Image 1 (cartoon, rainbow, N blue to C red):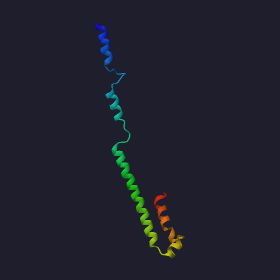
Image 2 (tube, helix red, strand yellow):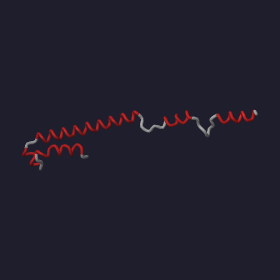
Image 3 (cartoon, rainbow, N blue to C red):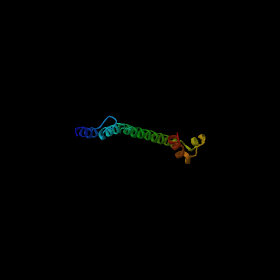
Image 4 (cartoon, rainbow, N blue to C red):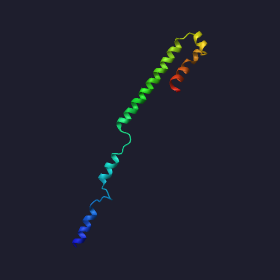
Length: 93
């Protein structure tokens, strides 16, 4: 009889080949690929890039608007094209 009770106790214990649930959960929670820090850094980088592009747009737009019609004509640009040219300079790279 004792032999059978010991076999039953051995079946209830976790073994190396059969990890318990807690070990599985720890293994999965430690394997995240994107940490919060990485995501925050990516958001900041995207914001910085957008701000830089917007600055290029505003600067180009201001410089072209400051030119006279004669100066624009010398460059082969019509005043109606200024916004498109500024947009391309900032966002089509």
